Amino acid sequence: MRAIKNMQKITKAMKMVATAKFKKDMRTMENGLPFAIPVMNLFQRLPVEDKAGAITYVAVTSAPGRQDKGLCGGVNTAVAKQVRQGITAEEAKGNVSKVVVIGGKGVAVLKRLYGDRFTHSFEECSKVPFTFAAASLIAERLAASNPARCKVVSNEFKSMVSYDTVA
Image 1 (tube, helix red, strand yellow):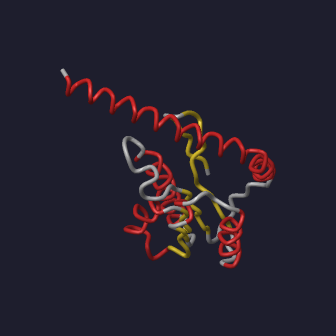
Image 2 (cartoon, one colour; image 1 turned 90 degrees about the horizontal axis):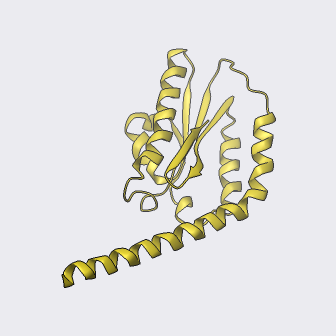
Image 3 (cartoon, helix red, strand yellow; image 1 turned 120 degrees about the vertical axis):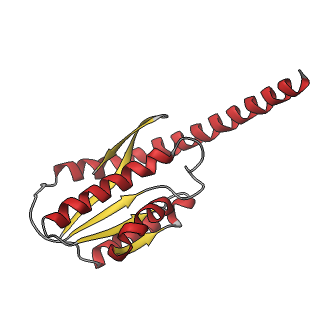
């Protein structure tokens, strides 16, 4: 009985820690929305053309240790799956595909099959809070590679247990 009560106390403490971390992450996300919404609106207004030519996929995933515990494997797997399907479809059309990965989980999943198509990978940037300097560095490297077409694949937060993978 004592052992069970001790386990219940530990479980309760773990729930409290998880709730505190989730609230902190939600607060960070909400604080960043005023900066992200105009950029997302700009992307939605840009014309979408399905023209031929080389394409660069930018896969945005998490860092190892960040979301690799519990049942979060699908968060990064969905991004990698969409990138894999896109590369397969583009190369079937005869287009050259390149890959840029942000986050270590995407590197681990995509490097086995598409390591020869990697142009850049940013594995360390998602281990610390994201800054304008990090975003500028990624944008500069991406612009320097001069992609003919670019597709950003990431997850969009819906709820604590649900994400939408968007490109």
